Length: 204
Image (spheres, one colour):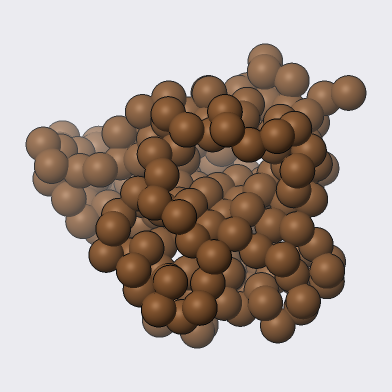
């Protein structure tokens, strides 16, 4: 389900940030894991990892790598997982393609003691510029689709996600703002950061 954003997989900064955030020997569930590239990397830290992906071809590629990945619809089947059964649940550029993101995040926070959520910031200045000057839905390397065939059905901004966490019982532990090459300043991130990554957990 997750989009294949960024540069080559072995150089993707989002993968490196997530890799560094998760301690060795953790139990990890990656929701929308694609072909399992991130899961494969996490195994270097003796992480017990499982992935969920809706795309059959992606699932097959992951299984061919020897990874524990199952085909499943995040919008319908997460209720089968027990509470606190994983240390970390990952939603890496996946949330925008779900039909019911509120339910998916609530399930992720129930299943995992910690949840990592990353997304493309739709309020980034380049996106705003295309809307303002062209008057059309933005298209770029991260949003290459036409409005009528995009799988990204719930676009979000940094301010939106901050408000979402405040209103839905998600405690924000860490925020990281970044572009394709480096972590960027937290000065006006809703304008100047194309991507955001949050570490959150269920409010106690």
